[in-house]
Length: 108
Ligand code: 5GP
Ligand code: ZN
Image 1: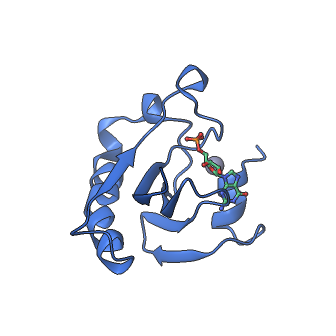
Image 2: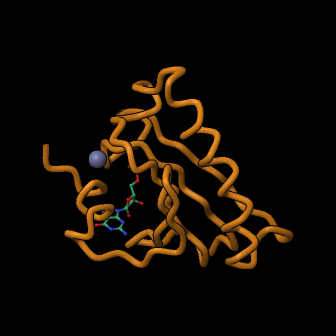
Image 3: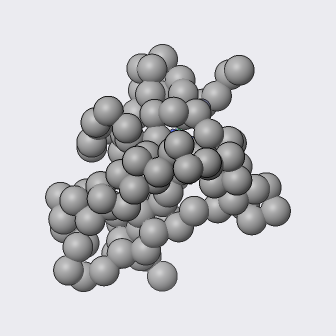
């Protein structure tokens, strides 16, 4: 399966990474909707939150553990940030590899 985020994780498509561990990677969104806009992406391919099972508890937990770390690194931990997960096309999920948006210092 040709998945854009799997390709990024495997280094086949470049991205600006800010974090990597055994479960998740974090890289800057190519079309930022805020001054800080990164994507927290599990290394394991899961189409969406709908594909998560209890076997993935560590992965999902890690996404939330990493979020405040990255927010701190990017300077929005205290000012505030939004975590957003789109689930399915009807909700605006465009890339069918589960991910969480971290948005801080919105432009609006
Ligand atoms: P979704 O709408 O699926 O929740 O969000 C997908 C996000 O991935 C969008 O904000 C989009 O800008 C971002 N995106 C899509 N393709 C690429 C890419 O090739 N590289 C990076 N860094 N971000 C991408
Ligand atoms: Zn994938």
